[in-house]
Length: 150
Image (cartoon, rainbow, N blue to C red; front, side, top):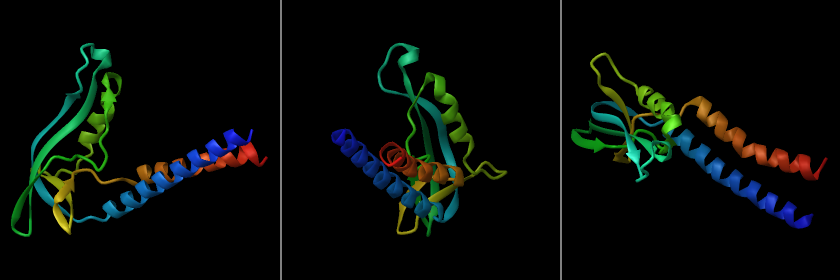
């Protein structure tokens, strides 16, 4: 059916554009410089207003201070992407919190934008995340090709 093929085509195109944009951003922020900063707070907090534990969502929350060029900044972004999980997937947030680069004194690596030092985060995108993004960008096109051009 031509209509289904058209919808599939534009959905695959949309996914490709968004995921390539994400991949480009991941590559760009992976090369940001870092300074050591002080972690003020780290926790997993509830997100939203559900009453039942099974319906609650959670996010990782951090607060930190760092100095760039003699000026002190505060930050609250753990990662360039916000992960919201349910109660059963809180382990993802715990793993993300444990992936911060810490030195022996407890200081954390803060990755900042040299042009806008107030923009920062504590976890850089890794190779695995970039690979997953690239694969997800290609998969819809492979499925489209298999479906309509056997």
